[in-house]
Image (cartoon, rainbow, N blue to C red; front, side, top):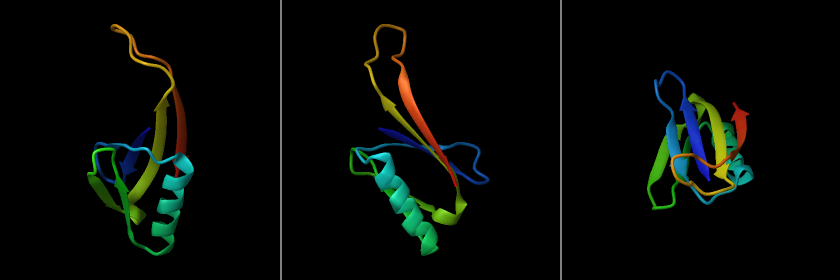
Length: 83
């Protein structure tokens, strides 16, 4: 699944591909917000993204339900959470 992280005052969003489900990622963000801590998320290749939880504007979850074929893209299922 791909998680796009919108950061306040940043012109571009961060994109992280992870095996975590949306509920687990939201639980991590909720915990970081409660503790005024840094939100960290590790991608499929072991790289970690860290963002101050208080600066996160939104999370956008997208999982591919099909595969890419030719020049077209398969439909995707999207879930968006706003902080």
